[in-house]
Image (cartoon, rainbow, N blue to C red):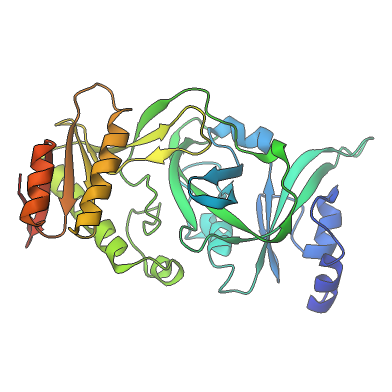
Length: 330
């Protein structure tokens, strides 16, 4: 077995962009011959294959986001059948990625680029470089399909370059060719506080993700409001929206399919939160069909009179938590 000092020394000789087989990379970084996520002593190896990922309704690759000059590589978690999770045997690889900083491991990314000429047909991979999870939003949960063509929740890790990387155009996520809004389950969300397996906030996620108190309140409020709507027999979903010309989907807050109402949930009732909610709702509304969707904002407390007047003028309902129930301000 290669000791840690030898592994580190060998790894330092492999530059981003280097093409080799898994067996060759294993000599430098550890890991095994198969699988997408391979934890080793010092590293977690992430193997991506653009041809395979496209078959499941997702694409691993580079994206660029508004107001963020640094690119992110989106990498879909492990698990080909059923929901992807962080717990149990099915979640070993995903939890290794999520805990890589705590466990002192580097994330190293490789992309399949072909096969070795000749009878061996061994796969070739390009070493993209070293990464770490985005500290603000380490992963998102999206809806996709599995090997059996069943809908399921997938974990999409958001990787930030750690040092130099090989960024080639063929690794970019394809641009959406048309605008399309798809209804998904309410726990398909950008709220990274939610465990994709059970839809709850877990202690392990709290420890890893440095979210603010306001974001925790919004996540908790969203769950409570979902339960309230469902207890009244309403169908609650979200919209996952791909916009033509972009690389990554938008995800709305809660959609009450029974009453055709699109809600934005906020962690406080301050003026800036009200303004943001208005902008988000007006943006999402453009893509919702059938037309005529009603709009609402859910707050943890009653907004000030001026903000209630603004929402009322825009015909946006204001719902706020009052003890164990919810009340309407306008």
